Amino acid sequence: MNSVLREFVMKHALFSHHDHHCSFADFEKNRAEYTHKALLGYAAADLVTAAGPRPLAYAHDDARLEALWPSIRTTGYGRAVVLGCEELFRLEYTPANFAPITEALQASIADKTPAEVYDYFVKEKANIQWVAQDGLFRISNAEPLQTDQYPDYYQFAFRIDDLFAISGPEPLNALERFTGIPVLSLDRLVVSLNAAIDRFRDTGRMNAFKVGIAYLRDLTVTDPPRHEAEQAFSRIRNRKAFYGGNQQNNAAVNQHEARALSDYMLHRLLERADDENIPLQIHTGYLAGNWGSLAGTKASFLIPLFEKYRRVRFDVFHGSWPWTSELGAIAKNYPNVYPDLCWAWTMNPEETERTLCEWLDGVPFNKIFAFGADTGLPWCDVGYATQARRGIARVLEEKVRKGFFSESTAEEVASAIMLKNGEQFYGIT
Image (tube, rainbow, N blue to C red; front, side, top):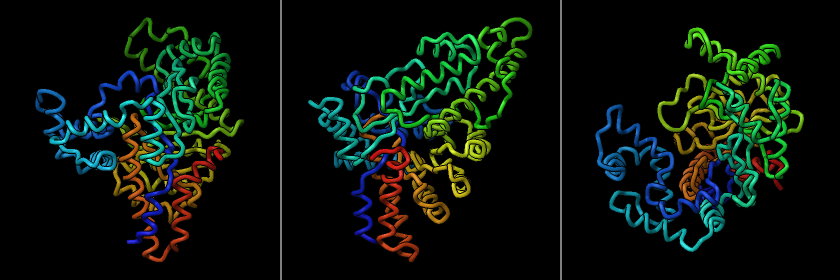
């Protein structure tokens, strides 16, 4: 065990490549309601899994948590909760401590402004220097335009998934409302999309485009001709596909045509990314929650886009777990693909250690992003960051033990994958 190297990693600042933190206003609105359950984060999904398909009728949430916690405390999700609770409050996360944990959490946020709360948990306790914030922004959500709602070390990803998985006219209507541009033709739709991007970019805090369509559709992206996209736009804009004839057949026709429009607009986003050197973050692999289909979430489905847009820098999220080796091979072959382990440490820490070890053998380390907490509440970052640092340290210690890295090389790699690669990728100095 290399204690010097471990200490170096455990004290090193992180770049969180992906978070979903609530705004200051939302935090303040819910301040009094934060209890021990607010530390669960993703572990809430493991509670559902542990309960099985026919869960018992527990009397209330605490009874359900008490009954199932012993079964999930050993998963990556559960261990992150344990680590965070120990790091923050020196308390073991057990039913016997639920009341003291709630008291400790409330005490830690009492008399602090939301900005001070974020600084305390994110900057001080998790030692995260920069946050790439994805607030699940929709077209009509102007939060990222309100620069007083997040700390100044947060930058934002522009996300407009509904337009790339379109199933009806509402995304078009929302763009009209947001930009004030009537969307009466395919060309005007493209103009409106670019106007929305301009509004976000002009805040000076937009750092990337984010595509999370894996939650709405598969990642296979065709390259439809313009006339197919125009036909789809016309049908969807005028809602004609919803009237007359067999409803099921119309729905099938509309879904087929909607894909043509969705894919066409995604290509327009990629062209903008290419023109202005804007990175594109994209969700691949496992889906948050339960019952999510993994059928179409492999990073390999995106290879045609990597091929076509060779100047666009793709930040490929979550290690594409469980297909991490596949993403490593893609990142080795494609200079425009940057493999990202955000969230992966929490989903499956042991697999993520193996993945990082493997990637460091195959991918230049200046291309690897080691961390993103991917959480909604700032204190959850503490457990996730601790979990990641411990994993990174074990991987690098093993490289040194086997003679693959010198100690100085291991420290150089740690600094790069934990912080410097993100700063260089997003142009932060």
